[in-house]
Image 1: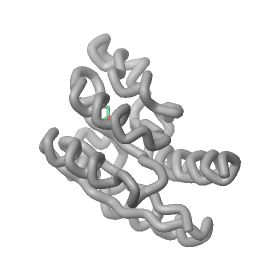
Image 2 (image 1 turned 135 degrees about the vertical axis):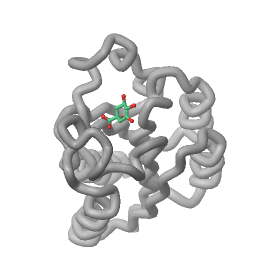
Image 3 (image 1 turned 180 degrees about the vertical axis):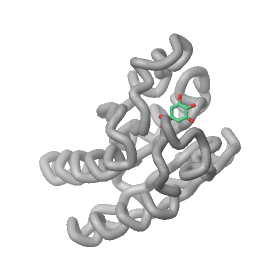
Length: 147
Ligand code: DQA
């Protein structure tokens, strides 16, 4: 069975109350509950972790080696400057899809750069909470096709 790790970075624990005009009104729990249902439909297992701490996210990525087949990550603001997170993803070499609820390319200039994108299989931005579902479906398809 395909097993995926879903990681959410800083401030995403506040989804639902945090800038709802930008990030929507669904909580992280709502989004992950829905994702769990889609995963069950697709016959894959997901493990979810949210952390506000760079090192926790890096440790979780390292621990995914040999345990999970792929990674879905919304790195929050770490996206824009955290080379250590990028290096962790490159190090474990797991197919990774980067997700952003908002369209980072249409926002402030500092959000236009993702240091994660060059080591990701793909990036889904601007589709709100459904971006996680599209990432899941795309990653499962990718893993099935590469078997
Ligand atoms: C975000 C976009 C980032 O720029 C921001 O710092 C976030 C959320 C998104 O999902 O749209 O925390 O990753």
